[in-house]
Image (cartoon, rainbow, N blue to C red; front, side, top):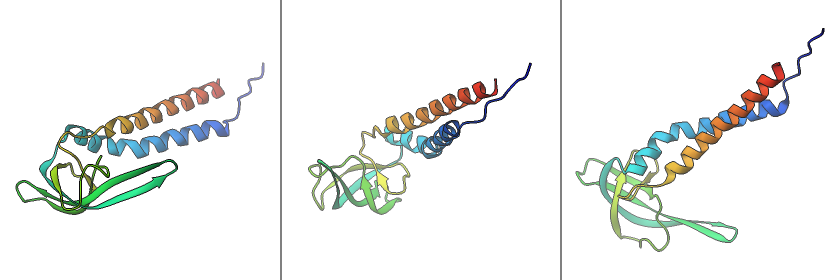
Length: 142
């Protein structure tokens, strides 16, 4: 009786690479996303300076950029974006409460953010894709 092994398919390799990429992108962001969801960081004030908008087919996405100062004066950041702000939320020169969670380019409102859901979904997708690739690999060895 001759046992023939199937070759590893390119599709299985592509699945594994896709799963690893999804994990590579999402896992480092899980901690910051959870801190943002809980609004865990330095509380302070965001001062709106510039509205930045991007046009997509059939829709526009805008965010306010400006400066953040913590309540105790220890943290001062310039040219950060207020996550979730939109065209109608602020006006240039207007201030609002914000939290600096340590993200490089953004601060959050005092109610936190829901971006953890997308980041978590990416991580779960990466795990799911890797599980499918592992099952295909195991079947090809049997």
